[in-house]
Amino acid sequence: MIGIILCCHGEMAEGIRSAAELIVGPQQQLDALGIKPGEGQDTLRSALKKSIRNVGKDGVIILTDLQGGTPFNVAVPLLNEKVRMIAGFNLPLLLQMLMGRLAENDIDKLTAGATEHACQHIVDASAILSGREA
Image 1: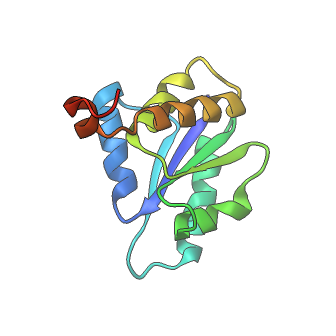
Image 2 (image 1 turned 90 degrees about the vertical axis):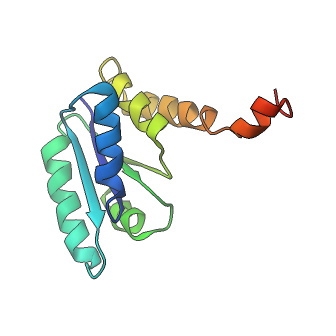
């Protein structure tokens, strides 16, 4: 099974993990890391390397909150054929990935399908409900 690491600023990773597990139940090979105020990149880098070793037996996808932010920048040097990253993730993407990894062991197909799914779930609900957008 492909491992997933949520790597974000503050408590976001733990919060979105909690929300996902409320919906789909407890998950294996899912880790949540956050950089706290006053922590340096070295602390996060060390935690991320350890997490990759723990959850990434069949590959790992790192989900970061913000392209160009500290979690993203710390993860970039760790990327390779078995370690991928998606920046700017949301809950629909994480749920799609958690459910999809049960049937899909191809890391490229899993990331492509999940990012497409996530984009489809970003909508202006007010515009849709008011009839301004179909």
